Amino acid sequence: MAMTTSHRPGFADLPGLMARMTGDEKHDHAAESTLDVLWVLYDRVLRISPQTADSPGRDRFLLSKGHGPMAYYAVLAAKGFIDPALLPGFGSFGSPLGHHPDRNLLPGVEISSGSLGHGLPLGVGVALGLKAAGQDAARVFVLIGDGELDEGSNHEAIAFAGAVGLDRLHVVVVDNSSSRYGWPGGAERRFVVEGWSAARVSGRDHAALEAAFRQSHPGRPHVVVAVIEPGEG
Amino acid sequence: MDTMRERFYRVAGLLLDDDPRLAVALAVIGGDAFKAARQRHPDRVIDLGIREQLLISVTGGLALAGLRPIAHTFAPFLTERPFEQIKLDLVHQDVGAVLVSAGASYDYPFYGRTHLAPGDVRLLDTLPGWTVHVPGHPDEAERLLRDAAAASGRVYLRLSLPANQRSLAGPGAGMSVLRTGTSGTIIAVGPLADAVLAATAGLDVTVLYAATIRPFDGAALRATLTVPDVVLVEPYLAGTSVPQVAAALADIPHRVLGLGVGLDELRRYGTPGEHQAAHGLDAAGLRAGITGFLAGPPVLDQPRAAVHSV
Image (cartoon, rainbow over all chains, first blue to last red; front, side):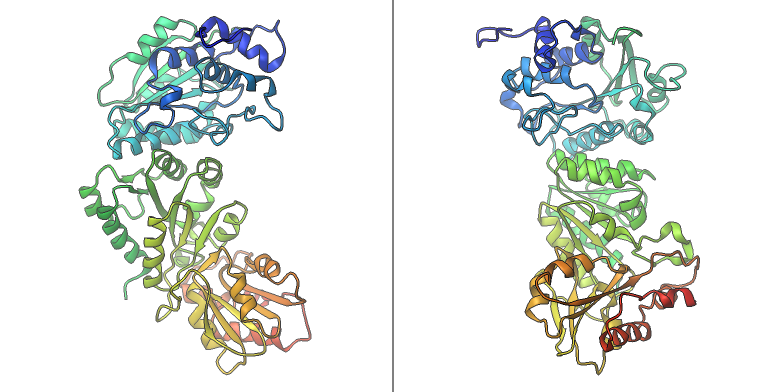
């Protein structure tokens, strides 16, 4: 695909960027479960840009569900954090683009992830640290999966963040029904019982996702469950 | 004399006053001791409840946000229970942190195996980049804490209840020479130094003292080496630093004996002194182990016989 400085890539460009990682133009890359959520966050919500990628007051986005990061890399490339020329090297020995991202290899990547259940607890620490450092405008967004929520470490983080009202912390649970035993009453119930604010929206509806992320939640952390219908990704 | 743990609580509270970059993360243990500091710095003294995975992850997150975090609880719950968090949320993220443990190998043996962590230093040896301090005196613990708080790397500070009568560390990070002799070298680590000095009274050996065991001060070992027979006396798993001695003396035919805490469970309660003796680490046990090794003929490491005779 053509990418020039005069062209600001949009959502429609993401499948093409992802195809550069796989060399597979026919695969329906739009089916990736995190694609819309990532795009809405980077396009409409996060106060971050390549120019402010190291600014102490920037918003932090932590991709906890590091599996299948092609959508993430595509969004980072579309937004100018990484050079699209890196994409074809995906997963190779000399490439900074692994099947799980490494913050020490890529600008704009806040955490190295891959093992499930680390991003949300790290995000609690980042949120506490930003508060202690007086970075009052900086918010933290963590993307996890509904299957990832099986990991007990998340529940230490959910209970603590709720108890102390860590309102700069935001979690989006991309719910594609991959938890082995499911979450009766919805994944958000695990958060709400600990005092979180919660919203449930379609993981494909950009306007609804943006509204859910912008929902006011004073004094409470906020979770958005982004539902991906089975078969969608 | 105060304990290392009491000193840590007091000095860390003072450091919080001086350094706005510093934060203390707790999992209930130490919460009362930090109460006054927490009132002064509510955003920088964080008690996570009984959540040790979260303790280490939050420590990593604080570092990612630009702070210098100190995490503290009992050694098994600081290093073993959340080991993957140490591996990934500190080391793999490549952030700095200070982990300060209490309890050591057998400080609270009446609690049983759950509260013993003789394997902590060996476990951290599986990860890169850790500085490991094993102070033998509250003054050493304070100095090492202050240095660690002011630095930026990954530091493990292993506090213990037993302590030497006086501080034995030199001014630098390297090993200090407590005694010189000509028929071998004994390396005493942290709180076992007094027992080593008593055990080697009258023996013609060099006694080195280490309050910092990683990085290992191989240069001091080589600089003071006479007969290349080396006995390590470590207050955690026996033999933990044998690979470091072997690396330091790789080009010299040598013998090395690793004395320390045995791997097998004692399944005993009691006191720290009883456990020290049961592992052959009191003066009598050490003297037997050291003289047997130095007398030769060369035998391989069999220091644990005493453990099974309790």
